[in-house]
Length: 203
Image 1: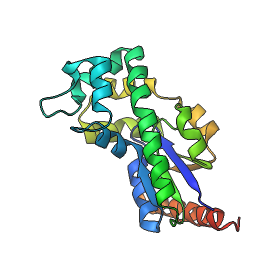
Image 2: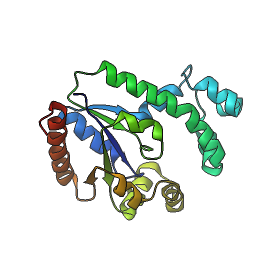
Image 3: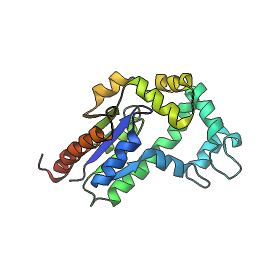
């Protein structure tokens, strides 16, 4: 049985770190952000729909999505954000589905989707949901360190995301990422065994 686990979490919670640990354990990781970047590179499948919807000002000289003005637009305009997501999510979902179909020999799949709970397009792709969680102060500190953004900028992003309590309520499984790598690795190892059992039908 092919089992797909949907991994999500707020900004700065450590989704990429957790995904890398699952990959080391043998899971096949499919990252929606990586697919989104491919779709918005020159000649990517999303470029012409984005040009048609937003205009040439949002495509850079190389033919790729111009991320800075687009980021500014969708941060200030909820309708524009929905329009962009309406272009990207069906394309991302289709690629994820294809990768799951063509990788059916994998023990299980980990689908990394920041908007897993918000975007219904991904719900039918996964059998379980896994949330990577940490407290808000840790989120802010990590994001500021890695991105150079100010605290108010990070807080504004967190405010736009699903509330932490709601994300935890919707999760089938939770990994706490605020106690160091050893504790993180142990949680991943335990869940890896559980997901392997699910994929073999022994759980």
